[in-house]
Amino acid sequence: RRMAAASLMKRGGTKAVWLAVALAATAVPSTVAFSALVGGRGMALRVPSAAIHATEGRISHGSSRRTSTSRGAQMAIEGTGIYIGAGLYAGQWKTGVVVNSGLAAIMFVTKKYKSALTGAGLIHACILGILLWGPLGAAGWGTCFMYLVFGSMVTKVKMAEKEAMGIAEGRGGRRGPENVWGSAATAAICALMSQLSPWDSALFKLAFVASLATKLSDTCGSEIGKAYGKTTYLITTMEKVPPGTEGAISVEGTVAGVVGSVLLGLCGLAANLIPPIGVLICVLAAFVGTNCESVIGAVFQNKYSWLTNEVVNFINTAIGAAVAMAAYLVLKSLAGAH
Image (tube, rainbow, N blue to C red; front, side, top):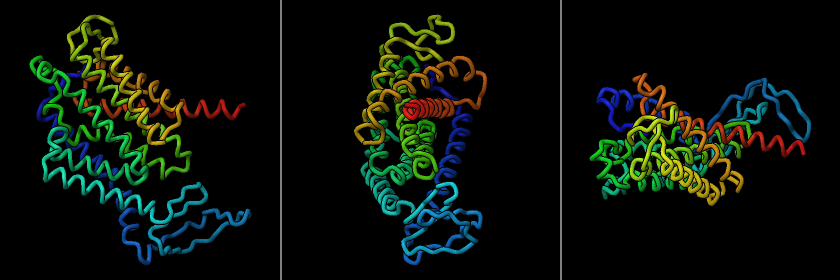
């Protein structure tokens, strides 16, 4: 579906872009998490005078004041319903830092990461793991880990044959920083929003699982399609094209993509991140996202140098998350109407 080859200049630019994304995504939560870690006497914050305080059923306008918490960083924007208290899930963020740093160190020393990640990819995967564990705990981290396991497995299917044809993923399927963020930046954003946003956290947990289901569907469809697809068609014209062509689809790849989205959806269900109906929503979202990705690949990707595989992956997962969120809101509205 997408050719693996890319120029060195394009790869260097892509790595720089995703490094910037990683640093930006990490800055705010890491700063707040650090303030939670120091604990002790806490951190004083300014609560705006416009904030509305509800106390014992009465609403009153408070004046600007300084507050301090003995349990770590605490921020209240009560007028919007946003509340980050008790050190921003301090214990969970601490655990995330310890677990991910420890695992990264062990994998680096034992070299166990080399089958799935590059050295830089390991560092970025550690950052991603912290960003997921902080708001969603082991459930979110484990769901993303299962994506990595399944994705790595299907990437290596008939690797020798795909390499001989020139359609295999680069570096033997090992993920670098650009792959980590291209695949999971949407998931990281949804995970953080599930904790930080004033809206229903279930909405963003579903979007989180759907984004990973969409990416696994894309990976399964692409890799199985290239390995076993008897006939591949260009999605925009349905004319026969060679395997690995941008925007190409096959029956075998499409079925594999659906299976991949079901597997990831079931992982989210087992982790108690989504309800049973959420699995069906994830499958629908993944199907829409991966087919949109194929259209983007067929129509636009060869025309714009900045539209790399990683950028397309980000768009793909964002579409999947958006479709899942839209489905959730529609179902919630229908349930409210009855």
